[in-house]
Length: 233
Length: 99
Image (cartoon, rainbow over all chains, first blue to last red; front, side):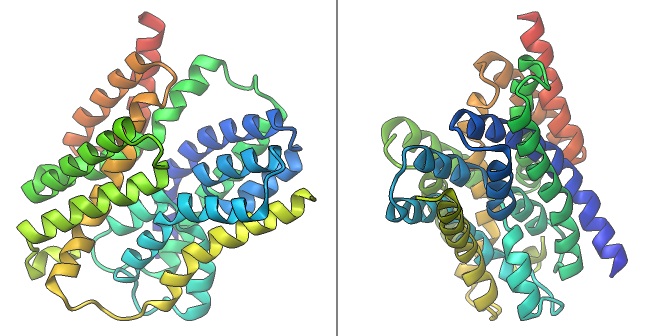
């Protein structure tokens, strides 16, 4: 059990580093929207999500309505429902109801990506370990960004923005190299995502991810249904 | 309106979105088609999140393209996540300094 926690903990380190840089930007944004460092930290500690928080801060700054807040969070973060549902197929019996209620908080794009790419089932200890460093990175980066926007020279801070995407590439490229069907899914999804971004710019980035991924996954499932032994990848 | 109320609503909605399917769904799916969709979904999600957003992630499209190419090449050789991520950021930074 402790070994599983440690494995999760170390798998979470690159996520945490990436989160620090992204949330640093969030902290700066919160300050420029006249939200104090404490409230910026509170938002990060209770939400643990990037796009949703940025949209949330914009609503707070504009004194928007709560209905607006609910709908915006729903639209941007709905992908977590899809990820949570997909993850349920990877959970072993150690995921009791209390543990599910607690660990659901840690479902983010990156934590999901790393958890789902593990071989076989995952344990609750592994997922708990996986969440630790990203949570610390996300909250401390927010505070650091809120307290100073000159901690990092701009050119370095800017280039840290690519870290999380680099991590995504490190997950889907090796899988696409091994399976032509996965490569096909990746290409379709990326193509639909580009199409939506440039031709349907009114679709939010959260919805765009859902549409692109579902279209690609359904097409590939119809064309290349997986054999039993492939499921445990 | 107090900022605390905004934050509570924001956090509550986000948590429920994550928690409901994760806690409620207990069955192992038997349908081969649905299983296949779930098999392809993670890679499709990652690809859609990465493209085209990665090209805007550094504030300079040239350094982002350099970082992306480096990341793809290193990922092709199946290096660890952190190596791929840091190489992307470092190469983008170097490109920024040179160009």
